[in-house]
Image (tube, rainbow, N blue to C red; front, side, top):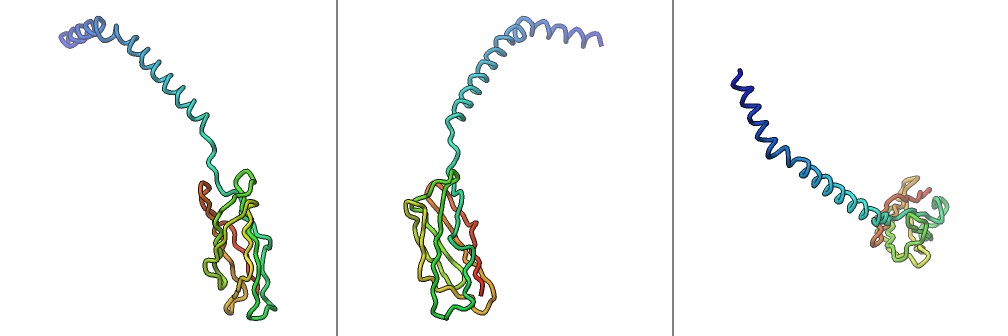
Length: 152
């Protein structure tokens, strides 16, 4: 056992003259590099903007009532699209589907409005249905949050 303790003391002595003596300098270099790296990352993060997204999609009508409509009747629907700050999104693509509508497509104007007219809405024997509104815009992503109820 004495031999093992003596070896440890001898190794510790060597490390004091070499490795341990240089440790504070190495440690200081690591701390400086880590601090600079953190400062650079924090600086970059300060310039990162919140990503744009479609904030709200709304319709001028909460529901369409086709109860007493004649078979050839058509309906209109106006969809408004805004970003997460409430500003209108120009050139967003609005697609309506469901209740006899198959991919009716319009783009929003400068006010974020897409006006659909002449929509041949049908329930095909059901008492209620839904028109699904899909919106996509370059740089803003997609939104499928709006469904307009059709009552018949």
